[in-house]
Length: 566
Ligand SMILES: [Zn+2]
Image (cartoon, rainbow, N blue to C red; front, side, top):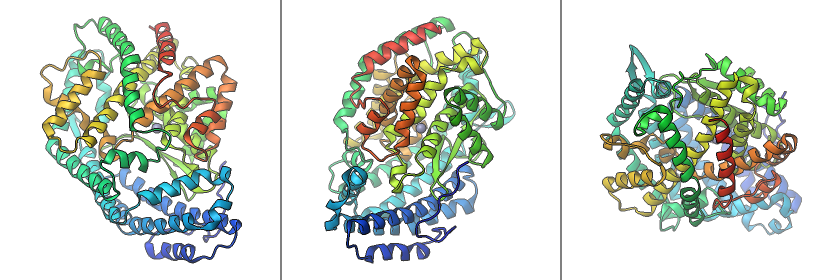
């Protein structure tokens, strides 16, 4: 269905397995004489091809490692590539960026075609410091350690060894004592590694702060925002967004929590009361294994558009899905693109509940995006900025949610919709918490661990509504340890809120006119990352809204839809 794309210049089936293999290609680019705008365009596309070949090997080795973190050879292969190839690629890449920026031919390029690439190159050259390359390798080693620590977290549950994601389904059961037991078991298991995680985090933070200082920034936040290419919004917008969430989302969260508390018949909500069905029904398990999970997710996506379901089924046939959770698999879920074949790969830690269906629909949205934009050149245009990439995934979730009745029994469809709408609301407040926490940590560099915990707890009380943590002070203080992003990809989180604002607009439009909304969604995804963020949103018929000004209207619509499924 998706045929290979012939290489421009590299030999067919050539792999960028070592620096020795890659170096000649970069050297040729560094030395090549450029005489016309046409030469420069050819040169940019040739460079993109070498970059993509490197990205492919880097990604494949990382995926091989995170699927089996106890496979020493896979880990060594991954780390060797990060230590031996990537640093050299970064240095060569910087020389190529400068060659491009200094070229008098740069002004002759079509700005509509090359504008985004141009501003990204300019930014990359501004931020690059050779001394940060080695620090990047150190940071990657810390990330591998975090994977070890969390990947080996298992608990004994009724004679079975379970990973923490596998244990999560017991948080959904009716029996409150069982939920409490499961919640405490997971939290206690995390606390066993509390000191290691605190140490590891401080080590990462210090590496990151050094990188920022090397690049001339007074704090890591400013550096990281630009490193992520956030040219269309800044930290002040994020702080305004936190406030908008506090003002316009928190009231709905409180209302939802009050209804939940009353339905559960408890006096106060405890942390283990949030995932259970408010009407006390057992967890709905719509599938048994990976094949079943794909069938259910594809059935939902098919209702949105048959081609979206075809993509997911095609990936299954190609071995591009690794969905089930198991010991020694890194936690979390993601979609990555293998740039050599330009195909997406989905990684997840699935149980057997509806939540896992949602995850697959989400990652399926990313995969559709990757496949729609796979023809684009240069390679950087095949990756949209994260704020828009998550519109693809969350927008897919929102549209699929409208079709739950076609796949589930009516009562389960209603329940899943309620779960999704409540998830949007609690999700936004959790994002604000995680983002605000990082803003604080990286602008209060001298903080102590105690202050850090206190600040986390204060943010949780600002954004998490009415939850009773009495007797769970330690669990509360270190709750953030379970948020992988804080360790692995700092500041990568607010994107989810910015994208949720886009996805809710997709949903709102879809409810009025599905065909038109899918066409607009598709038109936006089709552009990959070839336009700046506001223009991508606009192409998809959406408004980019970094300060959350649309929240009042969108939350009113969410509230109304939620009332219908109570
Ligand atoms: Zn995503």
